[in-house]
Structure formats: structure tokens, C-alpha cells
Length: 240
Image (tube, rainbow, N blue to C red; front, side, top):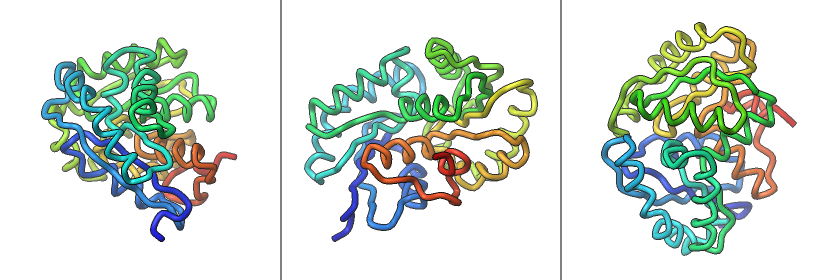
């Protein structure tokens, strides 16, 4: 049976082309990804607010696939509502589906705290207003943001077309300006990052957290499954 150990439910923004594929690359044997989507065009406050109105419908769809856990992807969808909105979304998903639930933003916060990252530099795919919202939530959650910069992309579908080398070069430039930090964060589930995590960690000697990596780490732990070591998941996956 496919998914004999776990079926990981993932609620994606509708243009997503990256998240499911990165999760599948990180899946241990016997674990599968099942997913559904919520419509969004522009990744701005209005688009993100409209997107999450569909979260209950999506949660019920994944429950019909007998998902063991459900994560709402689209990192920005969970911080767009301010600090604590990620927890509220998880509650709504759980109530609609009867399945344990979380969000990518919750996973990122848990990952940063697990690795004791109190000061962080952030690279994103987003426009400036979305970056500002992310920095505000991180600060309210007790994580100091020393620098944050986005690629300025408004549409999620364009984020998914960014090649890993461009992501690496952009993140490296942003992180090199950060000063004294405990680690780094690349935000966006539709931005390819698996190919760059280990290289950036080698460059800077500190952990790199990304949306899809943190999300997979979180849902595996919720299922009682240890994330596989020595993978593209970086230091987060090596941490025990």
C-alpha cells in the first residue's frame, strides 16, 4: 500500500509547482504526499486573505484521502493575518477535517527555535509589503530579523520558475549583508531551495531554514517519523 507509514496532506496555493516535488524528494520510504489547492493569483495582502477562505474546503478534501496530518503551505498565507494566525488556521483545518494540522509558518517558527536561531537573516521571493508583514510576525514571535529582502515577485507561478542557481546567488548576497546572526531563512514554498541549503550552510557555517524543508520536518515529527539524515534537508534534518 502506498503511504503505509504515513500520508502527508498538503494544502497548496493554486499555482504551486515546487512544494510537492521537494517534499517527495525528502520523503522517507513508505511515506507519500497527497495534496489539494486554494486559488490565488497575486501574492499580496488581498490575494492571501482571499486564498485562506478556502482552507476548510481543502482540509475536507485531504481528509477524504485519509491523510495522517495536514499542513497548509503558502507560508505567506499564514503570516499575512499577523502573529498567531498560523495557529488559528491550524485550528480551522483540524476542526474541518478531524486530522492533526499545522502550517508552514508554524513549522518555520518551530524549526528556528529548535536550532536556537534568535537572530535571523531572511531572503524571500516576495514584494516589499509581504516582506514587511513577515518581519513583523517573526519579531513578535521573539525572533530578531537583522535583514530581509525579497525578489519582488508578485505572482506565485513566477516564483516556481526561478532556477536554483538564482535562488542561491540571491540568498547568498542577502545573507552576506546580515552581520551577526544565528541562522538564515528562505521563505516561499514555491521557490526551489533543496539544491541550495547544504551549499549555503557550507558558505556561512550556520543553519538554513526553508519553507518546504521546515514543513516536511514538522509533519514527519507529527507522524512520529524521524526526518532522514544526510539528505538535502540540511542541518535541520541532522539535528536530534
